[in-house]
Length: 427
Image 1 (cartoon, rainbow, N blue to C red):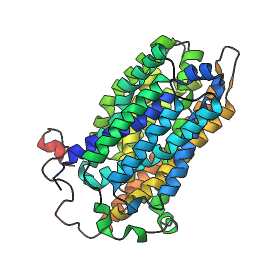
Image 2 (cartoon, helix red, strand yellow):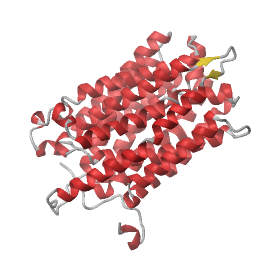
Image 3 (cartoon, rainbow, N blue to C red):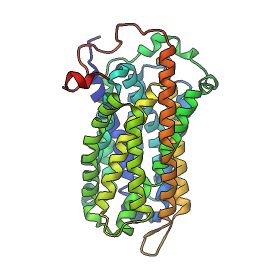
Image 4 (cartoon, rainbow, N blue to C red):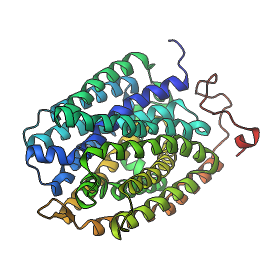
């Protein structure tokens, strides 16, 4: 087998995540478009997002039973192909039931694609460079926002709301082929022991650090998705932001994420997850309060959106970097698959709850947004304590463990460390 660098693996995984994230992200801003085309009330858009996350949760629960038994490359290719098929099915929807069915199919494969992607990164990149690697992978979120979502919105304006679904499905097929043929076999986790004899879920959940990590996951996702499905409708219908300029909003927010996500990964490696996660929480809570709870008259929708993207970038890089350190290599895909299930259960719960709390006026404006936003703030403010407890638990576990071998399991020739001073490397 030819030698593959960390960097090549990271960028191939980033391509998979770009399609995965774009598939999910585009549905939210397109909500008012397909709601009009299919006769769906805007207050029910949370159900569309919730269908994807509920299916991804079920797939995560199932995947936790067997994903560690397979070559991660092959499993990722299957998941990405299924996601592309589910996305294409969304373009053929004729009403809310068929759209929900398509999103369920996409979620069944999109959830495992995420957990496998982060498992591959954790397997391939050592801890001291993992924050930067995850920052790059999560930069696909920003790229999707900068390029993918605005292009999708323009496609919807020119070719109808179905066009973005078909375009993303085609891109997904291409990325599936790239992942299947260019990624090396990812079987290193099998060398740590027979994956079929890995810890049962009951034993995994008996670990207090695992339970706390999963609780943190639930708070991150529910705190975000109680509000996220309704942002596009809120800025258009409540704040009267013009539909023809909504792509500018997502592009600007994406540019901020494109800079903040890799920067946040580098800062997590330097300052720790607690510091950067808490900074993200502070930004999110502040902008949610002034943008949704007690809206400050004259505050531009652009400022609200940029603030949300910045806060999410810092919080999410810290969170994802921290959670990759919790499991052992032999149970990593199992841990992350169950984590994916919890992510999507919490996201679906937030989306469904918000749809129950919101109503709409005859002009489509949403009623109840301040209540939903306060719930989002409350959930978000619990995170710094959880970051502290998980990070502290990992430090104690590392101190009690025997010294690791000197040889790195990652590619020693190329790393992800950007040029910097000697002082910046000593942390």
